[in-house]
Length: 442
Image (cartoon, rainbow, N blue to C red; front, side, top):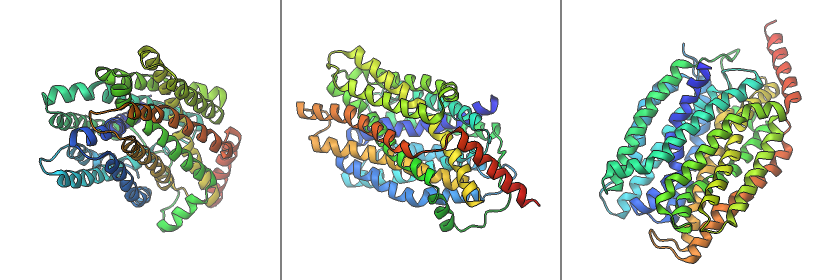
């Protein structure tokens, strides 16, 4: 349990950045820095093109790394301090003209995502080498996402109050000092994660395969391709809803003072949902449970759309239910990543943990970028201007906040029809891997 907690603390640290980007970065760029929402949307998508190169490179680098601490853990130690520094710089607003602010925003956001890649890709891959037991993998990821949600809960509960307290009326300064606090906390949590975990699944031989061949091997893994597609669709819907939450509460529900309560309620639902993932997966199986939860999340979003704007408590309850159902799927998705890594090893005879995880994580981040970009583009299409909204803008925000995420969850269910790694298939995969390793030693 201590090791599971230590591993989970790494995602608490990661979520100080990930949840802040999901929930507040669009608003920060449009309403604090003063950037055009369509430009912000395009910027988010641009950075993902860079991730298309850096993510597999980082995964391959981690797979090739050999130290006395293992292949993936060392990066938690090496990158903890740079992670904290870049977090602050990304939420620093220069006193310059519009073009200068845009240039700084693009540059600092690229730096932030590069640093996130450098520490989060090895951290994610670490979850695939702690244990080979499929059930324990769900347990490890459940702990991870419980602590991830604790990090998210900190972000939703304290970001805006801390911005107000530290800024004293200057929100730009408030965001900078708030991220300084989160960056330092994240640094210490990554160091605790490094100290408290152990790599148990180690490659039998040095990885000599060129990166191009590694990527080809991963892409031949049909189950990996399915998870990539699931990831981009799912995260597009999640980011649309999370990015627009502050606009939905502030303008559609006309409750600007209750933004923190609303997003925190969804995070609490997610935290509780993660705790149920392991026992329910053991009972129903990862695939059936995942599909059922996506359908439930889609239904919650649809119900949300038809709630009258004056029924605040009902909107709050539905957002809690959405968070509970959708975040319960997170440990299941990441446990399946370790499963498809095993499946890939059985296919190719080479274990490519870092490259497999980094490939899927790229599509997760592409979904994050696409959802963030869509939120910016849609706000521009609806005619949104900071602090000034019309009925047309409100209708557009409500539609994008409720209906589009529901559609994405339904698409995920359709895609999952082709995912076949159930308990029986995984057992056969593990036996195949063990037989191949035994044969290689004789």
